[in-house]
Image (tube, rainbow, N blue to C red; front, side):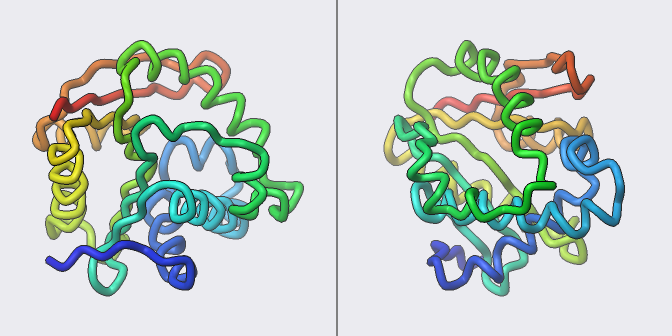
Length: 196
C-alpha cells in the first residue's frame, strides 16, 4: 500500500476521515454528548488537529485517503499559542469545548510523561474511514510509522480510550504501560509504548 505525507492543500481530504473514524470514540462522545452537535463540531476540531500535525509533526495517509495517521515528532511537543493559532484553533467556534479537552489531556499528561520520559514519536490520531475498516489499512499505516521510528531509534507512544483497540496495539508490538481512569470524565485510558 502506498503511504503518502500529507500536504496542507489536502487537509480537507484527510481530516474528515479522522472525524468519521472517531465519531463514536469515547472522548468524542464525552466532548459532544449530542450526536448532532458532534457531527457538526467534531470535524472542525479534527481539522485543526490534523492541520497542526501537518504543520508541526507528521501526517501519513494511504492512497485515496482511506486511512490517516498523525504523529508528534520526538522532542517537539510544545504546543505554543503561535502554533495553535497557525493551525486554526483561534478560529474555531466558541461551542467547541477546547477547555474541556485541555483539562482532560492535562489530567492524563502525567501518565504519558511517566510512561515515556524520553523523546519519542507520539501517535496522536490513527483513523480508518468507517466504510474501509477491517481490511488491515490501519495496521499497514501504523507499520509505516513504526518503521520510521525504528530507523531513527525512537520509541512510540499512544493512548486509546476504546477497549476494542487494545488488542490491535498489542498485536503491533506495543506494551500496555498505562491503564487508568481520568476522574472528571470517568474515561478509561490505555497507554501503549513500543521501543524501537
